Image 1 (cartoon, rainbow, N blue to C red):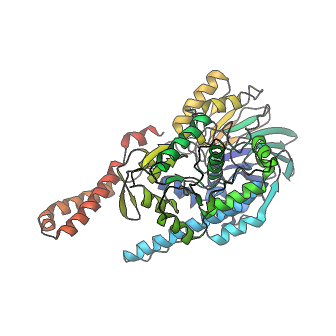
Image 2 (cartoon, rainbow, N blue to C red):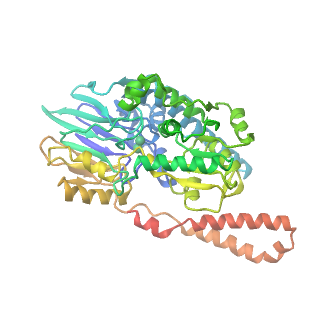
Length: 541
Ligand SMILES: [Zn+2]
Ligand SMILES: [Zn+2]
């Protein structure tokens, strides 16, 4: 059989592994590529997927980096079933629609921008709401430990990955020419002792393992510390009559935040007269899905539920679905907690809350999730003095808190521990879903401590896998990435700067307000150039 790596190869996003036997061609995961524009081009260039020749998909969990290209597959001729656990099926229905909505909005604003420049290029969204809706009837749900047979000679089984609601590790038994092989795809492995989720299930046997490595180079802080820090942030702003803004991903992190507030409430650390707003229609829908699938929550949570309590509810919790409700929060005086999306502050309602609170001394902005390079969230945690939101510079005067202990991913030692349960020491391990640095660190540790053979596949690499034989690399992508043409752009920038220099005298004769406007635009351009960190991009092999 052949396995092709179409994503999560020396990167975190775009998880997709296409498996081809003599009989059948199918894929594990169908993630969207997220990051720089070169990486995002892969979402458009889908020839390598051959969607109409994929018999079925098995999706490990609902995160967009594992599922976000399903509508694109349907748009291009995929018609087969999509297997997932029950909660994943429910979450996919809301997350894919939300993703389609984002694609459509982005395309519309791009068209408007082009029109303002007098251009009328044809711009279409990556996929539409209609494409996302077309995925829903294809979803077939299976429970954990309920083996299913998606094709002749293929048996699949989901096990609890302890990552987000319904997240699964996939055991795949493939029969070819009378011989059987067992492959394990880890999906994303959860952090142990996470609120709401069970610890990831360990597995002891496999012939081949495809394992995530997101935090291959570090461990997380303890959860007790994180809860205490959260209490400190609340106290800080409550005593100053200001708001606590928590940017959080709609699925899992938001619910974990609600649970944390519930725990703080029990400890008497959540002021009774302080309203808590959940201001994200997607997060409200996701919370409903968590409520529907009690069986997928951990034992601690189930015990609380059995007592008749709801750890996702608080007496002072208020949902704001409509835009009017959301706007009312900002008109209100006094302290409150606001949980809103997006988690990295680059889209959604959170931007309004930042605009109203970032500049207020005494307010708190509490970051509880990963902030990717280039996002406003990353700029704030790296100490930016001001942030541009809705074309307006907002000073950062609020207290910024970064609480790292809420990750949904296993840290380095937990990954090693999980892998240590496999008994077959001859099992080749393929590290996926990680940035190069984290993967290299983890690979070295695995070889040294556990003695497994480790490979780190490249994007578009293809391997053959046979029972009892070592895997062979069939195709490697060209070692040198295609050259990026920077010279014309740099020359263009230089011409523009020269022109501005030559016009300096004229500019100084303009009214002061116009000059300030120029100054702001130039400052912004200069900040953008500062962001080009040449050393960083060199270290990414
Ligand atoms: Zn995930
Ligand atoms: Zn992931």
